[in-house]
Image (cartoon, rainbow, N blue to C red):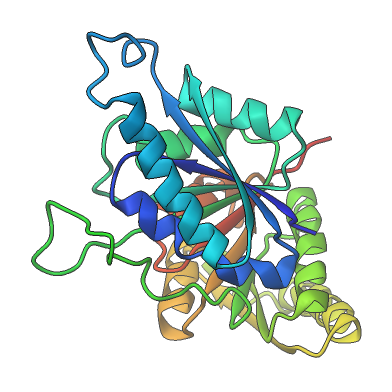
Length: 289
């Protein structure tokens, strides 16, 4: 299902947190990891490069060891060029099932793979992208140590939240959720957010209920999993984030494009905002025709 992972990494301590959080993906078939470190053309010159080749290789070896201890086979690669372009190119050309990037939320580090480049990867990705949030510990606002783990939500089977707007892209993302139910997900919540103007529209609500019930049946038939259904009204972004916080969600799955939860807001902007702000890892699934 998600056998081959491409992990975008850099020299920051936060990248160790990403590498240490992926053992939970083994439930969904993850076996092999490629650690990719990108350096710019300027950094690749001897005058601009502030880290020696030995230092780069040392960081990669340490992260490789972290992944191997979790049961993965691991390769490493250093490439030169645009990080977002190279990561997506390698994922497509070498047939990786999932791209993994880290995010430091609103305090993004300019130019770091665990910062703004993560969203460049998402915008161009033709493979699913797992965004793992890195939250700095109190009193460590200016540094993330190797012990700075991603919000202690690395059990990707514990509670999966699938947010859907019933778009074609969302339906495509649901096919992955089906496989997660078969692969050992213990709880899945199906969430659809409606425009507040539809509160008094029973036909719209009934249609949404039926679609969620159809998804629930598919998931229950496919695996031993608890399935909850929820329809909310208002802002899709706010309702998704609230559900993550209140329901102890460990993984959010969404399509990365769609027709929109409400007329003024397209799924692309919602999904990217969720990936930037969620306390739980977010798996964005693109729809490639």
